[in-house]
Each structure stands twice: as structure tokens, then as C-alpha cells.
Length: 359
Image (cartoon, rainbow, N blue to C red):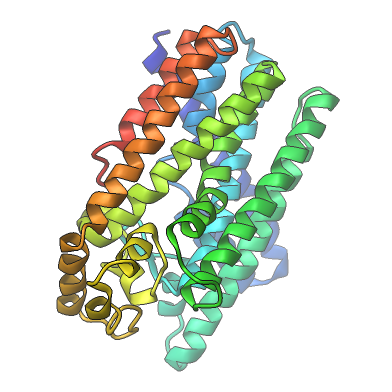
């Protein structure tokens, strides 16, 4: 089997496991009433069909680190990759509540779908129903993911270290989200360093460091290799988040799937905004920044001012810095024999996908 075919096969297996898990949960939920069963069905429908960025990263790197892995090891890797995808979905559900978003992947998210399905009640009640349901579904999925890690068919020492890694990941992700909210409401002063630190915790830890380090754990790599991959993941994840910030302001929302200019409407303190605050353009930007009724015309005006003051160019440069750090770390780790050339190449392929990304 070619590497491409193997990659597709493993990704298909992740999708199959996800479908099986949700099917079981949907069946079990029927005992608690039609509304609860409908919640699980809606959650399953929206969780499936994603790009599986995190599972693919884990499986690609695991395969490169342990090319001779047997069926049992590959099955365990697929299982752990599935749990990481569930963790991701739980965070998305909570994130949508915090951000007030009603769409994701160019269609209504769980909140939007449930709110639209409650005719005969007020808009306020519909939104409260949708948001409460999303919080509760996020709690359920988070619990399912943690239990999945605990039940993984791996050696006891590996399981314990995976659980430690997951615990650290959840703490850092929540800490990052907490700081993000504080920044958005002016509770914490916004500056580039604080925003970048928040982004590392909120996004990089679980989206990149977790799958890379989990792959190393499952492959039996050295502690040194694990630490290197964790650092690589932080740089990759920060580059990914910075690219996301650029897309939300300067990209095409029809391609990336988020609400148009939602970051500007919500007053999110991204690196773009942190830089703009240090320029003379900020007095013109802040008047409408964070306005709930921000029009597309006003948002486009802010976008143009952000571009003119150099914020876009600054963040593009930051992304380049993160990717340069990834290349340097991988080169050093390969020369030191910490990771194989195949593993380094797999990560570089992932890094290359960030450059010029549109969604």
C-alpha cells in the first residue's frame, strides 16, 4: 500500500470510529427522551465531515516514527486520534457559546441549528436553548474523550503518560480561552506578547503539540524527541492561529466558513489588533471595533485601515518566524538522531500547508 493510500485508509478508519461512537451515544440517548436523543443526533451530524487536521497529523507522524507498527499499534493510534478529534469538537462547542457564533463550516453550528428548530418561542429563548445545549453537549463530548484516553488499549505506562498529557492540554487550553475572554473585555491589557502567549495555550497546545507528542508516545520515541515535537507543535499551532486571524479579517468568509468579520464584531484581541493598538491608526479603528451591529461596510473600512497601518504585514512576518523556528528545530533534531528524516518531512509537509492557506 502506498503512503497516500495508507493515509487515506487510516483517516477513513478515524471517520468510521467516530460514526460508531456517535451512533452508540444516539441510541443510548433515546432512553432519556426525544429532545436528548435529538441533541445527540444534531451533535453527531455537525461533528462528522470535518477536515480531521489533528487526527491526520497524529497518524502521519506516528507512521513516520514507527513505520513497522503492527495492526494492534495502528489500531491504538487510530483510537487516540479519534479521541483528539472528540476533544477538538468539545472545545469548538464551548468556543461557539463564548464567541456568540451561530455558524461554522459555512452552515449553522449546533447553536444555530437548535435555535432555528424551535418555532413558537421567542428568539431569546431559542438562543438560550441552543447555547445551553451546546454547553451540555460539549461537556458530554469532553467526558467521552477523556474516558476514551483512559480506556485506550495501550501499555499502562503509556496510558498514564497520555492522561497526564491530556490533563495538561485541557488546563492550558482553558487557560488560553480564559485569557482570550479577559482580553476581549479589557480585563487584561492587550499587547502582542500576551496575545501570542494566549494563542499558544488556546490553539497550539491541543491542535498540534498534543497530536505530535501523542504520536511520539505511541511510537515509543525518546523523551527528548517528545519535548522537541511539543515545541514544534507550539510554533506550528501559533502559525495556524495567526493564519486563522488573518483569514477572518482579510480572507473570504465564503471560503473559510466563519461569519464575515466576526473577530472585528466580537472585539477579539488578536495579534492584528494588538499591533494596530500601537499605531496612530488605532484612534480611527477603535470607534467601531467590537460593535455588535458592525456592518459589512464598517468592517471593510476597519480591514483597510488595519492593512494600511501594517498590521497584516506584521502578522504575516510572525507566521514566517514560527515556520522558520519549526524548520530549525526539525533540522537540529534530525541531525541529533531524535527523529527520523521521514518524521521531519511529514511535519514539514504540514507546515507547508499553512502557507497560503485559505480555509
